[in-house]
Image (cartoon, rainbow over the protein chains, first blue to last red):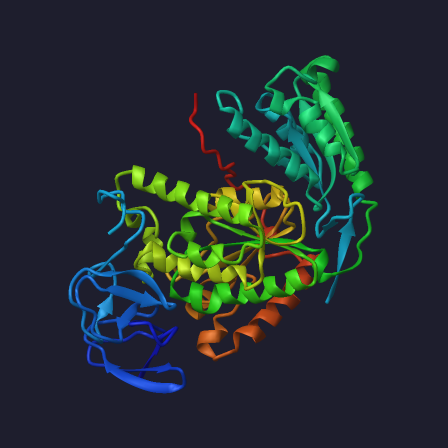
Length: 99
Length: 399
Protein backbone atom coordinates (compact mmCIF):
# COMPACT_ATOMS: atom_id res chain seq x y z
CA UNK A 1 0.00 0.00 0.00
CA UNK A 2 1.40 3.40 -1.05
CA UNK A 3 0.55 6.73 0.57
CA UNK A 4 -0.99 9.86 -0.89
CA UNK A 5 -1.58 13.13 0.98
CA UNK A 6 -4.93 14.78 0.20
CA UNK A 7 -5.07 18.26 1.75
CA UNK A 8 -8.87 18.66 2.05
CA UNK A 9 -12.14 16.81 1.51
CA UNK A 10 -12.95 19.00 -1.50
CA UNK A 11 -9.68 18.17 -3.28
CA UNK A 12 -9.75 15.93 -6.34
CA UNK A 13 -5.96 15.35 -6.33
CA UNK A 14 -3.40 14.23 -3.77
CA UNK A 15 0.39 14.21 -3.57
CA UNK A 16 2.50 11.06 -3.56
CA UNK A 17 4.91 10.88 -0.61
CA UNK A 18 6.64 7.82 -2.03
CA UNK A 19 7.26 6.58 -5.55
CA UNK A 20 4.14 4.98 -6.98
CA UNK A 21 3.96 2.86 -10.14
CA UNK A 22 0.97 1.84 -12.24
CA UNK A 23 -1.10 -0.90 -10.57
CA UNK A 24 -0.09 0.08 -7.02
CA UNK A 25 -2.88 0.33 -4.50
CA UNK A 26 -2.80 3.85 -3.03
CA UNK A 27 -4.28 4.79 0.32
CA UNK A 28 -5.20 8.29 1.48
CA UNK A 29 -7.07 9.73 4.44
CA UNK A 30 -9.71 12.45 4.31
CA UNK A 31 -11.29 13.70 7.52
CA UNK A 32 -10.18 10.58 9.38
CA UNK A 33 -11.56 8.10 6.81
CA UNK A 34 -9.21 5.99 4.73
CA UNK A 35 -9.83 5.56 1.00
CA UNK A 36 -8.03 3.64 -1.68
CA UNK A 37 -7.50 4.08 -5.40
CA UNK A 38 -5.48 2.06 -7.94
CA UNK A 39 -2.66 3.95 -9.66
CA UNK A 40 -3.03 3.99 -13.42
CA UNK A 41 0.35 5.67 -14.03
CA UNK A 42 3.73 6.18 -12.51
CA UNK A 43 3.32 8.88 -9.84
CA UNK A 44 6.77 9.81 -8.48
CA UNK A 45 7.28 11.33 -5.01
CA UNK A 46 5.84 14.86 -4.97
CA UNK A 47 3.67 14.36 -8.07
CA UNK A 48 -0.13 14.34 -8.00
CA UNK A 49 -2.69 11.61 -8.58
CA UNK A 50 -6.39 12.17 -9.23
CA UNK A 51 -8.56 10.72 -6.45
CA UNK A 52 -11.77 11.39 -8.40
CA UNK A 53 -12.63 11.33 -12.09
CA UNK A 54 -12.16 14.87 -13.44
CA UNK A 55 -13.89 15.61 -16.77
CA UNK A 56 -12.10 17.82 -19.33
CA UNK A 57 -12.51 21.53 -18.51
CA UNK A 58 -13.33 20.95 -14.84
CA UNK A 59 -11.25 22.53 -12.07
CA UNK A 60 -8.37 20.77 -10.38
CA UNK A 61 -8.85 21.34 -6.63
CA UNK A 62 -6.02 21.24 -4.08
CA UNK A 63 -5.90 23.03 -0.69
CA UNK A 64 -9.72 23.48 -1.25
CA UNK A 65 -8.74 25.93 -4.02
CA UNK A 66 -8.57 25.94 -7.81
CA UNK A 67 -5.06 25.14 -9.03
CA UNK A 68 -5.93 24.73 -12.73
CA UNK A 69 -8.33 22.92 -15.04
CA UNK A 70 -8.30 19.50 -16.68
CA UNK A 71 -7.00 19.72 -20.25
CA UNK A 72 -8.70 16.38 -20.99
CA UNK A 73 -10.68 13.74 -19.10
CA UNK A 74 -8.66 12.51 -16.13
CA UNK A 75 -9.59 9.29 -14.36
CA UNK A 76 -9.04 8.54 -10.67
CA UNK A 77 -5.56 7.04 -10.24
CA UNK A 78 -4.01 8.93 -13.15
CA UNK A 79 -1.00 11.16 -12.75
CA UNK A 80 -2.10 14.82 -12.84
CA UNK A 81 0.54 17.13 -14.27
CA UNK A 82 1.31 19.48 -17.16
CA UNK A 83 0.30 16.87 -19.79
CA UNK A 84 -3.34 16.95 -18.67
CA UNK A 85 -3.72 20.24 -16.70
CA UNK A 86 -3.84 23.86 -17.85
CA UNK A 87 -3.02 26.83 -15.64
CA UNK A 88 -5.81 29.41 -15.53
CA UNK A 89 -3.88 32.53 -14.53
CA UNK A 90 -1.17 34.65 -16.16
CA UNK A 91 -1.99 33.29 -19.60
CA UNK A 92 -0.26 35.73 -21.94
CA UNK A 93 -0.70 33.15 -24.70
CA UNK A 94 -4.51 33.39 -24.54
CA UNK A 95 -6.53 36.53 -25.40
CA UNK A 96 -7.97 37.89 -22.13
CA UNK A 97 -5.13 36.33 -20.12
CA UNK A 98 -7.18 33.62 -18.40
CA UNK A 99 -7.88 30.02 -19.45
CA UNK B 1 12.45 32.32 24.58
CA UNK B 2 15.56 34.51 24.83
CA UNK B 3 18.66 35.06 22.76
CA UNK B 4 21.82 37.15 22.93
CA UNK B 5 21.73 40.08 20.53
CA UNK B 6 23.37 43.43 19.86
CA UNK B 7 21.00 46.21 20.92
CA UNK B 8 21.68 49.28 18.73
CA UNK B 9 21.28 52.96 19.62
CA UNK B 10 17.91 53.12 17.78
CA UNK B 11 16.58 50.17 19.81
CA UNK B 12 16.79 47.60 17.01
CA UNK B 13 18.50 44.27 17.71
CA UNK B 14 21.22 42.70 15.59
CA UNK B 15 22.49 39.12 15.58
CA UNK B 16 25.79 39.91 13.81
CA UNK B 17 28.18 42.82 14.18
CA UNK B 18 29.76 43.63 10.82
CA UNK B 19 31.10 46.92 9.49
CA UNK B 20 29.60 47.96 6.17
CA UNK B 21 31.72 49.81 3.62
CA UNK B 22 29.37 51.35 1.13
CA UNK B 23 29.77 53.53 -1.92
CA UNK B 24 27.36 56.45 -2.08
CA UNK B 25 26.80 56.28 -5.83
CA UNK B 26 28.24 53.76 -8.29
CA UNK B 27 31.24 55.99 -9.10
CA UNK B 28 33.05 55.21 -5.83
CA UNK B 29 32.33 51.47 -5.82
CA UNK B 30 35.86 50.42 -6.72
CA UNK B 31 37.33 52.44 -3.87
CA UNK B 32 34.81 50.95 -1.43
CA UNK B 33 35.62 47.43 -2.61
CA UNK B 34 39.37 47.97 -2.19
CA UNK B 35 38.98 49.35 1.33
CA UNK B 36 36.78 46.44 2.37
CA UNK B 37 39.22 43.92 0.94
CA UNK B 38 42.00 45.24 3.17
CA UNK B 39 40.02 45.46 6.40
CA UNK B 40 38.89 42.47 8.43
CA UNK B 41 35.29 42.32 9.68
CA UNK B 42 33.86 44.40 6.85
CA UNK B 43 31.21 43.76 4.25
CA UNK B 44 30.87 45.75 1.08
CA UNK B 45 27.87 46.53 -1.02
CA UNK B 46 28.45 47.27 -4.68
CA UNK B 47 25.28 48.95 -5.79
CA UNK B 48 23.73 48.70 -9.26
CA UNK B 49 24.38 51.73 -11.44
CA UNK B 50 21.97 54.57 -10.68
CA UNK B 51 22.99 56.38 -13.86
CA UNK B 52 20.38 56.19 -16.59
CA UNK B 53 17.70 54.95 -14.20
CA UNK B 54 14.33 56.62 -13.66
CA UNK B 55 13.36 58.32 -10.39
CA UNK B 56 11.53 55.29 -8.97
CA UNK B 57 14.49 52.99 -9.55
CA UNK B 58 16.94 55.54 -8.13
CA UNK B 59 14.74 55.74 -5.04
CA UNK B 60 14.83 51.95 -4.77
CA UNK B 61 18.64 51.89 -4.96
CA UNK B 62 18.92 54.73 -2.45
CA UNK B 63 16.44 53.02 -0.10
CA UNK B 64 18.51 49.82 -0.36
CA UNK B 65 21.73 51.65 0.57
CA UNK B 66 20.21 53.42 3.55
CA UNK B 67 18.37 50.32 4.73
CA UNK B 68 21.43 48.07 4.61
CA UNK B 69 23.44 50.63 6.59
CA UNK B 70 20.66 50.94 9.19
CA UNK B 71 20.29 47.15 9.50
CA UNK B 72 20.90 46.11 13.11
CA UNK B 73 23.49 43.51 12.06
CA UNK B 74 25.71 46.41 11.01
CA UNK B 75 27.74 47.72 13.94
CA UNK B 76 29.29 50.66 12.08
CA UNK B 77 29.27 52.16 8.58
CA UNK B 78 31.85 53.79 6.31
CA UNK B 79 30.33 55.68 3.39
CA UNK B 80 32.62 56.31 0.47
CA UNK B 81 31.88 58.80 -2.33
CA UNK B 82 33.46 60.79 -5.11
CA UNK B 83 31.96 64.09 -3.99
CA UNK B 84 29.78 65.08 -1.05
CA UNK B 85 27.06 66.13 -3.49
CA UNK B 86 26.65 66.42 -7.22
CA UNK B 87 24.86 63.26 -8.32
CA UNK B 88 21.14 62.58 -8.53
CA UNK B 89 19.16 64.00 -5.60
CA UNK B 90 18.46 60.47 -4.30
CA UNK B 91 22.21 60.14 -3.62
CA UNK B 92 22.79 63.53 -2.00
CA UNK B 93 24.52 63.90 1.35
CA UNK B 94 21.14 64.60 2.91
CA UNK B 95 19.45 61.57 1.33
CA UNK B 96 22.13 59.04 2.23
CA UNK B 97 24.59 60.15 4.93
CA UNK B 98 22.19 62.22 7.01
CA UNK B 99 19.49 59.56 6.70
CA UNK B 100 21.83 56.80 7.92
CA UNK B 101 23.17 59.01 10.72
CA UNK B 102 19.68 59.15 12.25
CA UNK B 103 20.07 55.58 13.55
CA UNK B 104 22.94 56.73 15.76
CA UNK B 105 25.43 53.92 15.14
CA UNK B 106 29.15 54.73 14.67
CA UNK B 107 29.78 55.95 11.13
CA UNK B 108 32.29 57.87 9.06
CA UNK B 109 32.49 59.27 5.54
CA UNK B 110 35.20 59.59 2.94
CA UNK B 111 34.95 61.72 -0.21
CA UNK B 112 37.65 61.45 -2.84
CA UNK B 113 37.58 65.10 -3.89
CA UNK B 114 38.15 66.37 -0.37
CA UNK B 115 41.15 64.18 0.42
CA UNK B 116 43.29 64.62 -2.68
CA UNK B 117 42.10 61.84 -4.94
CA UNK B 118 42.09 58.06 -5.04
CA UNK B 119 45.56 57.34 -3.65
CA UNK B 120 45.07 59.39 -0.49
CA UNK B 121 41.43 58.30 -0.20
CA UNK B 122 42.42 54.62 -0.19
CA UNK B 123 44.87 55.08 2.66
CA UNK B 124 42.55 57.26 4.67
CA UNK B 125 39.63 54.90 3.96
CA UNK B 126 41.54 51.90 5.28
CA UNK B 127 42.38 53.84 8.47
CA UNK B 128 38.78 54.93 8.95
CA UNK B 129 37.42 51.42 8.31
CA UNK B 130 39.88 49.87 10.78
CA UNK B 131 38.89 52.39 13.43
CA UNK B 132 35.21 51.56 12.87
CA UNK B 133 35.88 47.82 13.10
CA UNK B 134 37.63 48.35 16.41
CA UNK B 135 34.78 50.56 17.63
CA UNK B 136 32.15 47.99 16.60
CA UNK B 137 34.10 45.24 18.36
CA UNK B 138 33.30 46.94 21.67
CA UNK B 139 29.60 46.02 21.28
CA UNK B 140 28.48 43.28 23.65
CA UNK B 141 25.64 40.81 23.22
CA UNK B 142 22.85 41.06 25.76
CA UNK B 143 19.78 38.97 26.52
CA UNK B 144 16.62 39.92 24.65
CA UNK B 145 13.34 38.18 23.79
CA UNK B 146 12.38 36.41 20.56
CA UNK B 147 10.22 39.44 19.69
CA UNK B 148 13.32 41.62 19.30
CA UNK B 149 13.98 39.84 16.01
CA UNK B 150 13.21 41.09 12.51
CA UNK B 151 12.96 38.11 10.17
CA UNK B 152 11.92 37.37 6.61
CA UNK B 153 11.22 34.30 4.51
CA UNK B 154 11.40 33.29 0.91
CA UNK B 155 10.53 29.85 -0.41
CA UNK B 156 12.28 28.39 -3.41
CA UNK B 157 12.96 25.35 -5.54
CA UNK B 158 9.39 24.62 -4.52
CA UNK B 159 7.83 21.20 -4.77
CA UNK B 160 4.87 19.43 -3.21
CA UNK B 161 6.53 19.43 0.21
CA UNK B 162 6.71 23.26 0.24
CA UNK B 163 2.99 23.58 0.98
CA UNK B 164 2.77 20.46 3.20
CA UNK B 165 5.81 20.25 5.45
CA UNK B 166 8.10 23.22 4.72
CA UNK B 167 6.22 26.53 4.53
CA UNK B 168 3.69 25.66 7.30
CA UNK B 169 6.63 25.20 9.71
CA UNK B 170 7.85 28.72 8.91
CA UNK B 171 4.25 29.82 9.38
CA UNK B 172 4.36 28.43 12.93
CA UNK B 173 7.62 30.30 13.63
CA UNK B 174 6.16 33.52 12.23
CA UNK B 175 3.05 33.21 14.42
CA UNK B 176 5.29 32.80 17.47
CA UNK B 177 7.48 35.73 16.40
CA UNK B 178 4.53 38.05 15.75
CA UNK B 179 2.86 37.08 19.05
CA UNK B 180 6.06 38.02 20.87
CA UNK B 181 6.23 41.47 19.25
CA UNK B 182 8.63 40.65 16.41
CA UNK B 183 8.70 41.72 12.78
CA UNK B 184 8.07 39.06 10.13
CA UNK B 185 8.13 39.67 6.37
CA UNK B 186 7.14 37.57 3.37
CA UNK B 187 6.98 38.48 -0.30
CA UNK B 188 7.08 37.20 -3.91
CA UNK B 189 4.27 38.83 -5.83
CA UNK B 190 4.25 36.38 -8.76
CA UNK B 191 3.85 33.55 -6.26
CA UNK B 192 0.66 34.89 -4.74
CA UNK B 193 -1.18 34.84 -8.10
CA UNK B 194 -4.00 32.36 -7.57
CA UNK B 195 -3.85 32.73 -3.79
CA UNK B 196 -4.22 36.51 -3.45
CA UNK B 197 -7.87 36.28 -2.33
CA UNK B 198 -6.75 34.34 0.76
CA UNK B 199 -3.87 36.69 1.62
CA UNK B 200 -5.94 39.83 0.95
CA UNK B 201 -8.49 38.88 3.64
CA UNK B 202 -5.78 39.09 6.32
CA UNK B 203 -4.85 42.78 5.83
CA UNK B 204 -6.00 44.89 8.77
CA UNK B 205 -6.03 48.13 6.77
CA UNK B 206 -8.14 48.67 3.65
CA UNK B 207 -5.57 50.92 1.94
CA UNK B 208 -2.83 48.35 2.48
CA UNK B 209 -5.10 45.60 1.12
CA UNK B 210 -5.71 47.71 -2.01
CA UNK B 211 -1.95 48.25 -2.42
CA UNK B 212 -1.40 44.50 -2.18
CA UNK B 213 -4.08 43.59 -4.71
CA UNK B 214 -2.85 46.31 -7.10
CA UNK B 215 0.65 44.83 -6.88
CA UNK B 216 -0.67 41.36 -7.77
CA UNK B 217 -2.66 42.78 -10.69
CA UNK B 218 0.40 44.71 -11.92
CA UNK B 219 2.58 41.61 -11.90
CA UNK B 220 -0.05 39.43 -13.57
CA UNK B 221 -0.40 42.12 -16.27
CA UNK B 222 3.39 42.07 -16.72
CA UNK B 223 3.16 38.29 -17.10
CA UNK B 224 0.34 38.54 -19.66
CA UNK B 225 2.20 41.26 -21.59
CA UNK B 226 4.98 38.76 -22.38
CA UNK B 227 2.54 36.94 -24.66
CA UNK B 228 3.65 33.70 -23.02
CA UNK B 229 1.95 31.15 -20.81
CA UNK B 230 3.27 32.03 -17.32
CA UNK B 231 3.92 28.33 -16.83
CA UNK B 232 6.83 28.55 -19.28
CA UNK B 233 8.37 31.19 -16.94
CA UNK B 234 7.08 30.39 -13.44
CA UNK B 235 6.70 27.68 -12.05
CA UNK B 236 10.35 27.39 -13.03
CA UNK B 237 11.50 24.15 -14.70
CA UNK B 238 12.84 22.87 -11.34
CA UNK B 239 9.33 23.19 -9.85
CA UNK B 240 7.66 21.39 -12.74
CA UNK B 241 10.25 18.61 -12.83
CA UNK B 242 9.58 18.06 -9.11
CA UNK B 243 5.81 17.76 -9.65
CA UNK B 244 4.30 21.25 -9.35
CA UNK B 245 1.91 21.80 -12.24
CA UNK B 246 0.64 25.40 -12.27
CA UNK B 247 1.49 28.80 -10.82
CA UNK B 248 -1.72 28.68 -8.78
CA UNK B 249 -0.63 25.42 -7.13
CA UNK B 250 2.78 26.91 -6.33
CA UNK B 251 1.21 30.08 -4.90
CA UNK B 252 -1.24 28.22 -2.66
CA UNK B 253 1.67 26.27 -1.16
CA UNK B 254 3.83 29.39 -0.90
CA UNK B 255 1.46 31.49 1.21
CA UNK B 256 1.59 28.96 4.05
CA UNK B 257 4.94 30.48 5.02
CA UNK B 258 3.16 33.63 6.22
CA UNK B 259 1.47 31.84 9.10
CA UNK B 260 -1.98 32.89 10.26
CA UNK B 261 -1.65 36.31 11.87
CA UNK B 262 -3.11 39.58 10.50
CA UNK B 263 -1.02 41.43 7.90
CA UNK B 264 -0.18 44.98 8.94
CA UNK B 265 0.92 46.40 5.62
CA UNK B 266 2.24 46.04 2.08
CA UNK B 267 5.70 47.61 1.71
CA UNK B 268 7.87 48.22 -1.34
CA UNK B 269 11.16 46.46 -2.01
CA UNK B 270 13.69 47.52 0.66
CA UNK B 271 11.12 49.63 2.51
CA UNK B 272 11.37 49.48 6.31
CA UNK B 273 7.95 48.64 7.81
CA UNK B 274 6.59 51.31 10.14
CA UNK B 275 5.55 48.91 12.89
CA UNK B 276 5.94 45.39 14.28
CA UNK B 277 3.97 42.33 13.23
CA UNK B 278 3.56 40.65 9.86
CA UNK B 279 4.22 42.55 6.61
CA UNK B 280 4.06 41.74 2.92
CA UNK B 281 6.82 43.06 0.62
CA UNK B 282 5.93 43.62 -3.04
CA UNK B 283 8.99 42.08 -4.69
CA UNK B 284 10.31 39.79 -7.36
CA UNK B 285 11.08 36.32 -6.00
CA UNK B 286 14.73 35.85 -7.00
CA UNK B 287 16.99 34.93 -4.08
CA UNK B 288 19.66 37.20 -5.62
CA UNK B 289 17.40 40.22 -5.04
CA UNK B 290 14.78 39.43 -2.42
CA UNK B 291 17.04 38.63 0.54
CA UNK B 292 18.90 41.90 -0.05
CA UNK B 293 15.59 43.78 -0.07
CA UNK B 294 14.58 42.04 3.16
CA UNK B 295 17.90 43.02 4.78
CA UNK B 296 17.43 46.63 3.66
CA UNK B 297 13.97 46.52 5.25
CA UNK B 298 15.53 45.45 8.54
CA UNK B 299 15.59 41.66 8.52
CA UNK B 300 18.51 40.31 10.53
CA UNK B 301 17.85 36.65 9.66
CA UNK B 302 16.45 35.43 6.35
CA UNK B 303 14.94 31.99 5.93
CA UNK B 304 15.20 30.19 2.59
CA UNK B 305 12.60 27.41 2.75
CA UNK B 306 13.51 25.03 -0.03
CA UNK B 307 11.52 22.18 -1.56
CA UNK B 308 14.50 20.94 -3.48
CA UNK B 309 12.92 17.91 -5.14
CA UNK B 310 14.89 18.86 -8.23
CA UNK B 311 18.28 19.13 -6.47
CA UNK B 312 21.14 16.85 -7.54
CA UNK B 313 22.87 14.63 -4.96
CA UNK B 314 25.13 16.45 -2.47
CA UNK B 315 23.75 19.77 -3.70
CA UNK B 316 25.34 23.18 -3.09
CA UNK B 317 22.79 25.91 -2.43
CA UNK B 318 21.95 28.24 -5.34
CA UNK B 319 22.86 31.36 -3.36
CA UNK B 320 24.73 31.53 -0.06
CA UNK B 321 24.33 34.87 1.67
CA UNK B 322 22.46 37.28 -0.59
CA UNK B 323 21.14 39.25 2.38
CA UNK B 324 24.74 40.52 2.58
CA UNK B 325 24.41 41.71 6.20
CA UNK B 326 21.62 39.26 7.11
CA UNK B 327 22.51 35.55 7.04
CA UNK B 328 20.39 32.96 5.27
CA UNK B 329 19.05 29.96 7.19
CA UNK B 330 18.41 27.12 4.71
CA UNK B 331 15.68 24.66 5.57
CA UNK B 332 13.63 22.00 3.80
CA UNK B 333 10.42 20.06 4.38
CA UNK B 334 11.46 17.41 1.88
CA UNK B 335 13.13 14.37 3.54
CA UNK B 336 14.81 13.44 0.25
CA UNK B 337 16.26 16.93 -0.12
CA UNK B 338 17.63 16.74 3.42
CA UNK B 339 19.25 13.41 2.59
CA UNK B 340 20.82 14.93 -0.54
CA UNK B 341 21.80 18.33 0.84
CA UNK B 342 22.03 18.17 4.66
CA UNK B 343 25.70 19.22 4.54
CA UNK B 344 24.63 22.63 3.27
CA UNK B 345 21.29 23.08 5.03
CA UNK B 346 20.50 24.24 8.56
CA UNK B 347 17.11 22.72 9.38
CA UNK B 348 14.99 19.73 8.37
CA UNK B 349 11.22 19.42 8.73
CA UNK B 350 11.02 16.57 6.23
CA UNK B 351 10.37 14.58 9.40
CA UNK B 352 6.73 15.65 9.01
CA UNK B 353 6.59 13.32 6.03
CA UNK B 354 9.13 10.67 7.02
CA UNK B 355 8.23 10.34 10.72
CA UNK B 356 4.79 11.99 10.89
CA UNK B 357 6.14 14.72 13.17
CA UNK B 358 3.36 17.26 13.93
CA UNK B 359 3.86 20.67 12.21
CA UNK B 360 3.71 22.45 15.60
CA UNK B 361 6.50 20.30 16.97
CA UNK B 362 8.72 20.95 13.95
CA UNK B 363 7.83 24.64 14.28
CA UNK B 364 8.96 24.68 17.92
CA UNK B 365 12.23 23.02 16.93
CA UNK B 366 12.68 25.78 14.35
CA UNK B 367 12.06 28.48 16.98
CA UNK B 368 14.83 26.93 19.08
CA UNK B 369 17.25 26.83 16.14
CA UNK B 370 16.47 30.44 15.21
CA UNK B 371 17.35 31.52 18.76
CA UNK B 372 20.66 29.63 18.53
CA UNK B 373 21.54 31.26 15.19
CA UNK B 374 20.44 34.64 16.55
CA UNK B 375 22.73 34.22 19.56
CA UNK B 376 25.75 33.84 17.31
CA UNK B 377 25.96 30.34 15.87
CA UNK B 378 26.90 30.62 12.19
CA UNK B 379 24.68 29.19 9.50
CA UNK B 380 26.37 26.72 7.17
CA UNK B 381 26.40 29.36 4.44
CA UNK B 382 28.14 31.86 6.71
CA UNK B 383 31.15 29.57 7.03
CA UNK B 384 31.92 30.18 3.34
CA UNK B 385 33.61 33.16 1.73
CA UNK B 386 31.41 33.59 -1.30
CA UNK B 387 30.76 36.80 -3.18
CA UNK B 388 27.16 36.18 -4.21
CA UNK B 389 25.74 37.92 -7.21
CA UNK B 390 23.47 40.58 -5.67
CA UNK B 391 20.69 42.37 -7.53
CA UNK B 392 18.37 45.20 -6.57
CA UNK B 393 14.81 44.69 -7.80
CA UNK B 394 14.46 47.49 -10.37
CA UNK B 395 11.30 47.76 -12.44
CA UNK B 396 12.05 50.62 -14.82
CA UNK B 397 13.93 50.72 -18.13
CA UNK B 398 17.64 51.36 -18.63
CA UNK B 399 17.71 54.77 -20.34
